[in-house]
Amino acid sequence: SRTEERVHTVCFFGYLSEERGDFSILEGLGKKGFDVRLVGGVGRVEERFFASPGVDYRGEVPHAELPAALEGTDAFIIPYKINDLTRGISPMKIYECLATGIPVVVTPLPEFERFGEHVYIAENVEDFAKILKRLPELETEEKVRARIRVARENSWEARFADLERELRRRL
Image (tube, rainbow, N blue to C red; front, side, top):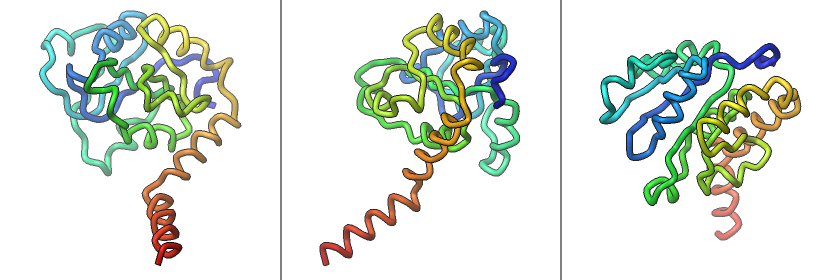
């Protein structure tokens, strides 16, 4: 597995805004020695954030270039704030992250809690750092396969097939 030695590069991809994203976690992980790669658009953020130690902001990339932009990622992070806006969202990026098989560390949004053993839940920068440091001992090939399986079971193709079966059943 990619995490055998140590987790070095963590990545968030997608649109990140101050309303949703917990920038203190991103900054804190950079200060703790992780390379924090951000790929995608960013809303209003203080300029100093991009100069923070360990923060590697790559901007938006075309979808076809996303695999290259994510290469070398040891773990994905989804550090959302917990607030009225985020409590009701279901970020589709969770399935994209799971589909890679790479470990995913998330904040305790209600939507993420249902993924149980397929994600690691962390509440703050200290929790994120502890989990990321322990990933080499926590990860197994079975966990990698299980994440990929969950993503496949929730692909658009699988969802449309379920919908089609239900429609045929009712007709």
